Length: 251
Image (cartoon, rainbow, N blue to C red; front, side, top):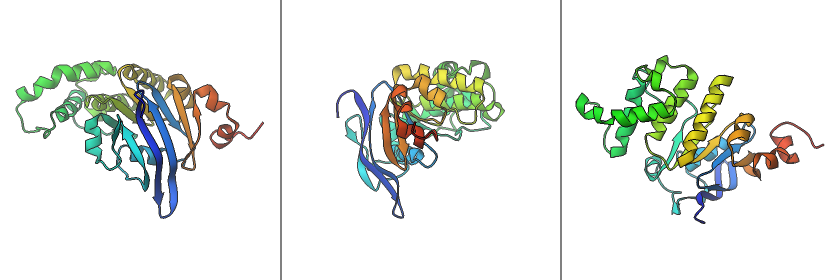
């Protein structure tokens, strides 16, 4: 694997009762890039994400991260290597504050338990870094709010903050703008751009405007296979992509 490739799959395949949800996918993600995975519903995007983060085991194929074969690894071990996923459905503690949520994520870097029983003074050592992360995602005014009180877009920002607390080298985002209004979409898109300055991002995203604005490379999946790959201009002008993804027939 070349030095500028951080994540690569070779013939990645996942079959369910003989149906290939992902079939022979070869994917190469360049270090420091924003790479989007798009396609119509049922194209295999989420299955592919589950394979990369080891929530599913492939039927066949190989996954290499930073020149290390992670195909047979467990999800927690992959996360410790620096490949961390942020889920489509917000995964935070709803009745804890923004600060507490990020602080708990920071504790995981120690590699031990979450220390719920430890004294407040011990946990407070994480406050400065937690507040930095909270500010980074635009939540400085919400540090004392409980997660359940946050508007939807702000809750997704909190989820990204807890993911960043794990200090990932590569961040996988599963539909980061799903269900958001225009203002929240713009805010999250700016956040993704900002956090990508120091890490690689692979995202599944339905919003083509966000994909066009952010992505260096786009891989289009259909029926579990790669249909096309390139920058936005390349894939959006591909007749097969237009037909499969946008519902536009051949001109």
